Image (cartoon, rainbow, N blue to C red):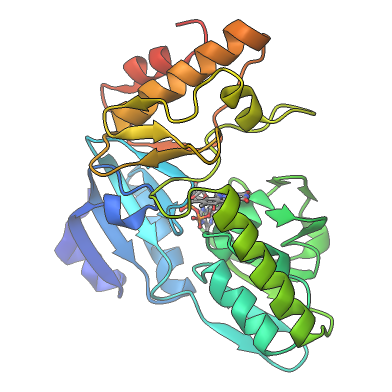
Length: 312
Ligand SMILES: Cc1cc2nc3c(=O)[nH]c(=O)nc-3n(C[C@H](O)[C@H](O)[C@H](O)COP(=O)(O)OP(=O)(O)OC[C@H]3O[C@@H](n4cnc5c(N)ncnc54)[C@H](O)[C@@H]3O)c2cc1C
């Protein structure tokens, strides 16, 4: 691997070594990444990706870390965060361009303040624009790609500008999952500010009533099976409030696991295993994980796979 001194000749952003990842995730769980990078702009990010690829060094983009469970043992790779260098929002009066590291909450607020309709239904989503575009996040009949004009990505080390038509977007799906999202450009129609503010207020309230937003968590743990609700299945197994170590299946919503303070990633994995086994046993439904596991490959992979596997 290239030395940090050599890397600094090419990469202009912040470099961290042994960076704790718990505070970079909403779960507040997990050990440190071997390296941590904050590129200053898209060119800097592309340079970094090319160097990492050239040296076969694993990396992961951490957006707001709101859909990730990091191993207690950390991540033997590089975590890259785009918030510092790629979170500008620029509005020309016609199109809006936002960096992938932009928090969705900031995008929603900016759009409402400027009378732009189209993302207010994402109020309360804790992720970044990059995370949202990769998954084509949506709610209440709308999605982040609805008014997308073009998306800037890094594909095979090259910065590219793709018109929206060159990508495929579906329900919680995009064809960009192997790319790094750098920015998105949108053309939003005009909206009524007062109405959008009302929608934002209502959605934030609805979320705080139905989701355990007061405790660290990583959103929905399992994907909802077709025509079914993972949360309801888990609740119907009597698992609300079920605890292992310092992690708990949320009282408010069966498909959330909350960190009561100092939970380990293995506490969470064991809860995941319990919920999967009980739902399989009682309803014959296999629940698929919705959160990304990071750092579990180091000697722990087999253990985790065995724990998570419904056959285990
Ligand atoms: C309280 C709470 C409520 C939630 N509600 C919802 C909900 O209603 N609907 C929903 O779909 N999700 C929800 N989530 C989950 C989460 O917010 C989303 O999955 C979100 O898209 C993750 O974005 P992020 O920026 O935090 O990505 P991270 O969690 O940091 O990363 C998730 C994945 O996206 C990748 N990624 C992130 N940025 C980029 C990028 N720029 N380029 C390429 N890949 C990237 C990462 O590498 C990783 O694989 C919720 C989470 C929480 C904590």
